Image (tube, rainbow over all chains, first blue to last red; front, side):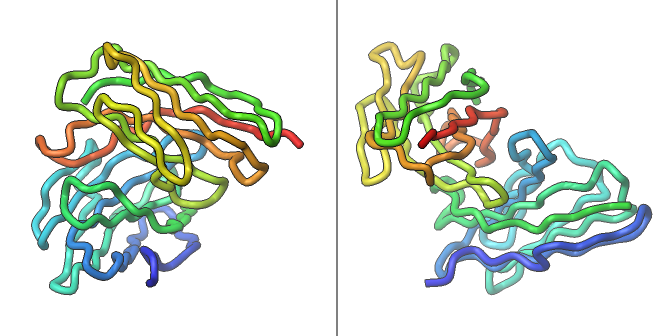
Length: 112
Length: 112
């Protein structure tokens, strides 16, 4: 079975641009979470979606938004990019909201 | 969710047991202890979790003290592929949002 897949794997943007990151969960998993990992730190929670509804949001500005589609895939959008948004963005899926997470390999965003 | 404290780094000889400690003195009765690890440039990988009894799976063993204020992850025969950052996380799996709070973890280096 395929694991959690994320795209793109790497991307470079300039300040002020917008980015969309995509995530496909493991088949049968209904919950998707997004995490941001800045170099040298542990992942930080951004969002969790379960059954297409937002179930949690971390301490991130409104420039960050996400959604979950009927097939349980998800997108993370970041507007008005700042240099500090450069990070590894991780998507994780789980069967339900409370189950252990399976992470994808991440999308590495560089903002110049 | 309770806060955890882990050593910043540890070394272990290949073939020996790696014992990674975690302090979670403010853990509450319904919070579980979870361990994840992150190999360089990959997403975190689930290892094991437990409530109060010791747990063992094909990857590791988890020893939780009787007062539940600390725990130890044991990799019985460490290999070079176990070199990674190990995160200890405490959370209630059924309350509130389902975010995991990752600290900076323990950087384990397995030496040949």
